[in-house]
Length: 169
Image 1 (cartoon, rainbow, N blue to C red):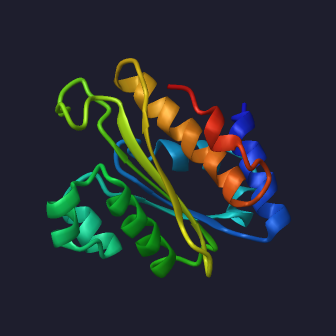
Image 2 (image 1 turned 90 degrees about the vertical axis):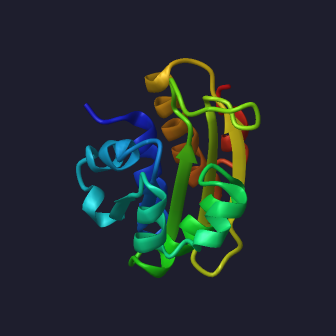
């Protein structure tokens, strides 16, 4: 059974005549899995980059090491750079990038477990990004991040301008 949110994203991308590509860190390919589970997704999904390490973000997406050193991988500047890298390294017209701390370890006072940053960008348009926090264990954080990311694609396409505001957490 297809994920209703992924189906909605696919329909919106098809209406816009746009392809989606994603860069995933804390979600580890979950978003790509959800959208490719939709029959016909090859018409609107180009590719996914699973960039769990900083080295992968640098090598696969061109994120500057100095940016990661200054802001960390879980930051708005990092996901904005990741989204730009997705657009530069794919055939997509819409990019999505997510990085976060799913837990149970890895958090800090400044960036506790559940901290997630997400960016969306259409080719030729300014990017948008959000820093969010989700409660729960590792699976709950990853699922909430994927949901928020997909709702943000709808907002990026103009299908639901308030989509990101409805993210849980």
